[in-house]
Amino acid sequence: MAAQADTYTALVNQPLGKRIATALGLPQPAVLRRYQPGQALVEGSVLVLGEGHAADEAAAILLDWGVDVRRQPAPADRFGAVVACYDDAGTPADLSATTLRLGSVQRQLGRGARVITVFRDPAATADPAARAARRGVEGMTRSLAHEMRRGATANGLVLGQDTALSSAGATGALRFLLSAKSAFVSGQFLPVTAEAGALPADWEKPLAGKVAVVTGAARGIGAAIAETLHRDGATVVGVDVPAAGQALAGVVNRLSGTALQLDITAADAGQRILAHCAERHGRLDIVVHNAGITRDKKLANMDAARWDSVIAVNIESQLAMNRAFLGAAGRGTVAAPLRIASLASTSGIAGNGGQTNYAASKAGVMGMVSATAAEMAASGGTINAVAPGFIETEMTARIPVATREIGRRLNSLQQGGQPVDVAEAIAFLVSDAAGGTSGQTLRVCGQGLMGA
Ligand code: NAD
Image (tube, rainbow, N blue to C red; front, side):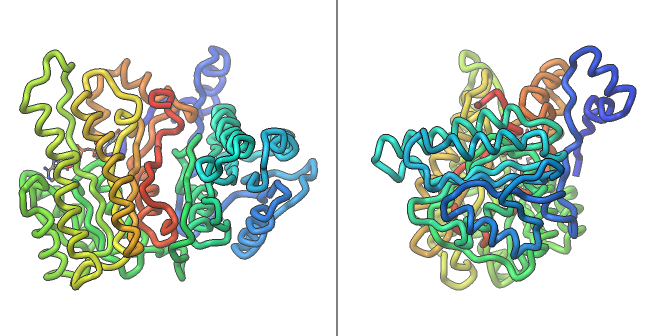
């Protein structure tokens, strides 16, 4: 996997580089704590704040995971995480006590710490005061994420009106946000609106026994996704164009998976994937629509070839393949529940000059995901998207140096993400532990200012 080095981040984490950066007031990005098998879920104890039911549930879940849980902070405590629960907030005045207590422990947060706010879906109440309170938690969390230092992050876990934090999907989401797997996710909200899903027997192998198709697996983010799904226990089917056949074989051979050389814009792409999975593996549980292309030009200079190819590869192909997969769901090869994840982009959220075609396709992915979720709900299947911000890949390495340097610093973590950061979010969303989340787009962008 070709992770590009961020020389500046390495430099300012050396004593001399740090002194120079401090003297000149330059950004000092932290080296992020990333997931390693066997590592502790969090470093240090976890403080649980709030007076409602969710706080009691959070404490019980964390104790069950062997975490050192505190309900009251002591001055000497060093916290790996704070879980601040607002599930009982009925009016904005109710936010005060928990928020001010959260503020009072900010200096006790360790390197790479997590703040997770837990609150109910604003859209699930028609009461103006309650919705104002819930939206208030969002605003507070987003702003706090901008204030975090030393690789720490702040995110929100949004519960449906009747969804308990102790349900499998909410518990799974809590664990993802607490863990080092969410290193490049900050200022984001993960909605869990259904009491669905299941927790794994082994948290180190949450995809054991699953067969997962990854398109565009020959390099970049797709190769990282293939590796991460394999690490989590899945058998991987890598798909890429015949021209990338050699690189694809290199990736899947390392992972004891199988390769399918296929242009995903072919009319029979979905059927060919189904046939491959039936023949080689006897099943299909997970599909990751990762393959994507850019053909950048200002709209004034856009030609049909550039526009049409981006729409065809990035979204029309996914719509067509999903029709084939959903048509076969729960029968023969295709498992119920089927789990699908798709790659969007923050360009599809904020727009980006020169990318009208790409942004149309990636906003299209988000629309497709939210509409397909309803269709998949009956079978218990889920579909979600991940919108990466600036990720260090061959694609972004080609950006001119000044633009690249601005692109990678303009987020709360002051650095580009790694392909594995996107892969971790995908691996979580296609796991049964994310079964309560569907139709959503999770940004993996370090709280990028572009697209905020
Ligand atoms: P990449 O160009 O390095 O890799 C894309 C892979 O998809 C290649 O192996 C390519 O051969 C394959 N592919 C392209 N067209 C195909 C087709 N018709 N059929 C089958 N395979 C095809 O790209 P990447 O940077 O790894 O990006 C992966 C995904 O993430 C894309 O959807 C991209 O839009 C998205 N994304 C990337 C970034 C980033 O910063 N790199 C940011 C946001 C979104």
